[in-house]
Image (cartoon, rainbow, N blue to C red; front, side):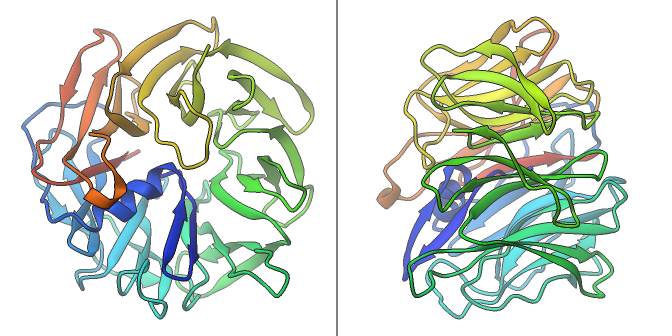
Length: 373
């Protein structure tokens, strides 16, 4: 899944790591293309392509073939794609116009068939309250997402977690988070909890857990931007920005330290399907708007660290294949925001051999992929 925050102040944008790329890719006119590389695991990959001041979601076979658009074909700005648990549908965030310049853009969450048919809007938030980042319930009947309000008369923002039925029949529940700016929502594999990261009204940020009924809000890790559920739902893997320690945390358990990444600030984190490994991107500078420039695989059993990439380009959104044999990620050149985004492509890391393979070969932006179940 895409792990980012969106805050619009007037016509300026403050964003976390992956959204920096989304904003920039919308200014790029490149088109993605397949390189013919081979891939195992899930049979399809969802990804995002930037076109002028629009963005669209595409799906392709895991070998890079049969590329086709699956978001609404109306020139809007669509991002944050997410597979349903059975791989038959997708959810995505979208706007009918370029949302970072148009105060009247209508923002919302859609669900559609994986073939790009039967688009259903499941949210109804209009203008300047930013729906984004849908996450599916394990049974596929609901999606949860966050909206962030504009500042109130005191200058404070507030977040709401919305739980919507995927048949389009409406919002089932709204969970108000007063004074929180919440991002990175993740539904637990058991369906019993939602995890998210938030800036709080108390001047710090951390990882929180709450039930889908809005009960039992708990801070499980302070000073962390990202969290990933273990496949069994019995805990979260988090990376502490201050200590650079990777740990497993939960509602009622003491943190279990796994590894120390000396000099590296953890950013994106994702668990392998069997729960033995995590992939984590890192930076050398702490900050919510930093983009990872290194990518590692860490064993949750031994704490051993393997370097996937450590260079001058940025890396985003690592995601495991369903068999855990490969890691998909997006990589592109670091460039000043005012210059627009350069080429970006998806890469594969073969875990057994350590081989890196370029999956796409684009003249513009193509990436932030999501592997099908």
